[in-house]
Image (cartoon, rainbow, N blue to C red; front, side):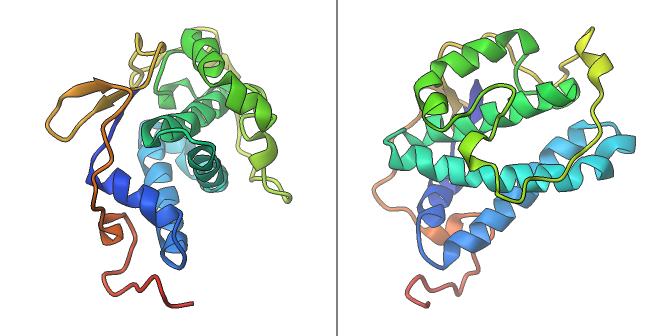
Length: 199
């Protein structure tokens, strides 16, 4: 898959694993992701899907942190969560929201098979052990779209590795090096006056 990586992503990584500010960043990232993917849906379906996506993306924040703790680089940890989302979109027939074509789903699953199996994640159950105990909101499916899927926002041909587009447009295989100094206030949702030492 091809994803972006810039200072905000590095700051978000630091913030999601830090006390106090992690909650701010989690909520903001959920809002951002829900908004981005709802914009790809037909207007008639957007509100029907909003709560489902909020719940789903909130759960994937836990996946992201677990992947980091398991030693995956930032780009791969984030790609894992995007793969989860695309499995969910596929299961619902929301092909217009997918980031890679449906025929690459198995490839993306197999690349992270070890991680997915560890947490009981499957294509049919994209959250596995990260599914909240009280579940996530349901949303109507559009299975008819799977008969002749259209992927206006998908980029095929990037299923063999994680490809990262940097801020200057350069595409790197595997992602960039984490900066030595990262300011968590650069992460989405962190208040400028946030103090990590406050409990």
